[in-house]
Structures are given as C-alpha cells and as structure tokens.
Image (cartoon, rainbow, N blue to C red; front, side):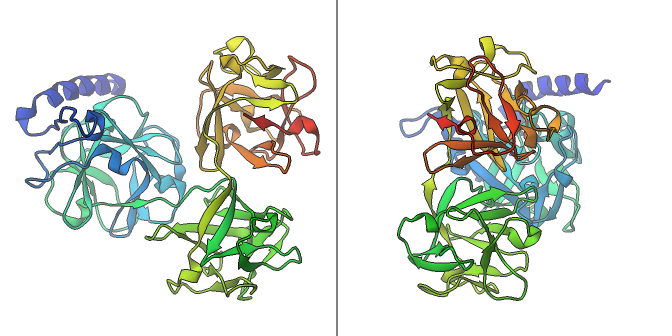
Length: 461
C-alpha cells in the first residue's frame, strides 16, 4: 500500500478510535467550565498511564522546551528538514534541533514542533502497534502528531500518542538511541523531563547581575557598573548557526570576547570565531549563564571591576538577567522606508513574486506578521501568507527579495538591528546584506552591502 494512502487510512482509523473511549486507548477532554475554556482544561487519561494520572492542563506547557531522559534529549539528527527523519536521543546540548515548541490542541493534547526543522514529532504512519518508530512529519491536523502529557509524582512526564495511547520510549540510555512507542511499563526510558529550552535572545539588552550591568567603557575592556541606562550598557545578541551567540556592544559594535587562559573578558572585532561565541543556558531561578568557548562562565567581580571568566560555582555573580532596551517585535507591522512601504504587488499569492515599495496606504498587502525564530525573524505577508526571502540562498548584492512558502531556511530569516534614530536595519540572516529600497514607488527591493544609506533604514510601525 502506498505510504500516503496508508497515512490517510490510519488517520481515518485514528479519528474513529478517538471517539471510542470505551476502548481504553483514548483521551477525553472535559467540557468547558467557568474557570477555563476546554482547550486549556484537559482532564484526559490514557489506558497505558498509571491509574489516576491526569493530563496536564494545556496552557501549562505552552512554549519551547526540551524533552530529556537520563541526560539524553529528543533530537532531530543533524537538524534534518526531511519528512520521515527518525528522531533519536542525544546528549543535551542546547541546539535548536533539541528544542520543541509545545502547541496545545483543543483535545487537550500537544503537537511538538522541532526548532530546527519546523516539523512535528509523529508516530510513523499513524500506527497503533508497539514498536512503531517516532519520526518527524508535516504539522497537519492529524492525530498521529498529537501527544498527551501525563505528569508523574517524580516531576517527569509520560508522553503518549493520541492515536495508540502508547508511550514515547527510548531504546537505550545511550546517545543515538531510536524512539518508538511502547506499552507503559514504568521504565525510566519512558519518563521524560520537560525543561526550558535555552532562551532565544534578540534585540538589545542590559545584562544585569546583583544590580550591576555589563558595561563597555570604550577602551577595549569590559566591566560591571551600576545600571545607568546608557548605550555603554546595551548589548545585542546575534545568534549563530551553532546556536551560540555573538554579544555585540551597542556603543562600539565590537564583540564580547573570551581570550583563552586570560581569566578576564574584553571586546574585540567580531571576527575571532569561537572566542566571540557564547552559549546561553537557563538556570532554575529564571536567570541564565553565558558560557565561553573555554567552558568558563562570564562573571561580575564587583562595581567597576573587569568582568571575569570563572569555572562554574553556581555563584549568583555568574547568573545574569536581561532588561529589554529594544524589545522583540511581534504581531503585525508595516515596514516603511521614507514615504514608501514594503508591499506584495496586487496582493499576489504566487511564490516567486518580487516585493516592491509603494506609497503607504494601509492595505493588507503592506502588512507583515513578524515571527521570531532562532536566528532571526520570518516576515510573513498578510495578503499572501508567504514569507519574504532571498531566493536561492544567494549572497550576491543586488538580488531582489521575493516571497515563498515559509520555512526556517536562513534565506527566509531576517535580523532586525535597531538604530539610534529609531529605525532598523533589516539584514538577511544568510548573506548578512541589507534589505534596500529605492526612492521610486513600484521598484523592487534588493539586498546590498551596508552603506549607511537612508534606503536601508526601515521604520517598523
């Protein structure tokens, strides 16, 4: 039987099975109550779950998380974007391919969308049999990508398929273990800790610990000083392909740098590779650490002192919080250059249509939904529901921006850099070149080398 037909058949069987609660393999969501809508008040149990266990309320885990058992995280190997790629476990490393967006569904379940592939964890073929592998597939409204989360008394969760009621199970404690669905046996390999993913930071921030902010005095050193709101304490986070960050001074444009064996940090041009790269790791109290390529942590040595590199001691001086200087952008906006707005001409819904600028008129084809992703933003046109991209992953200056079906390819991600005048540079995450307009209404927009031109400075309103 062709795989597509098999999926459709199993999808039909699954829909029927979900209605047959007497079978003991299904989940039943409660009706809405006065305290919470049905979509946020699941009361389901599965036949394979411990007696009396209840599914977690759907709103409780909305967001991005990791799924870990025995130090091994559910992993999309090598960040594959291929449909049908089998998921594995791998040592938890903070990579985007180990990040899963938990999206609550009306039936009380969740879809689990991978941060690297934008695909969802599923039971292959919608199988109801033990031993069926777990892979990734298009995030369709199908029961085989729906998962029920049942909390256990030890703080972990059973993750069970809504199709079969069987539990997500690692084949071993080792790295590279395959994932299948199995009857629940109380095995540690079926008990998953749901952790916070490493935070995705964009825009400009103050970095604060103990009332002191990371400070750039402008002489190549980096200190900590009393929070004062100056540009010397603004730092922009630029995520790298390996999920680390460059931390760039808002006053000098240079990177926070961790020379090997120095014990202190400084700032330098952003071309030192790993010495400029920092891993951001969440701490249980809600703060985070910044870990250099040497494995040492960024730390405060006190007011006015040079910032230090230290071995992890769980000290509060190694734990940082952020205050937004330029907050992340979400929801719907127009992107305006001079008196012209970025526009999808004639509200075309055709992939490959090149974007133009046109006089600001408030029409839907000039409205863009900004979706923050790891590494940048997707710019989704509200008329076409397609994303702004640089076609063909091309780094050539002068190439025109067009629209295509949205994915997490870096040619569809855009880095928004705030400028002192309140406008933004919009640069391709793939090429690093700037989205550039002309002064002519109806002209295409292209990517160009940053020249400081007003045609590269966009007002986001």
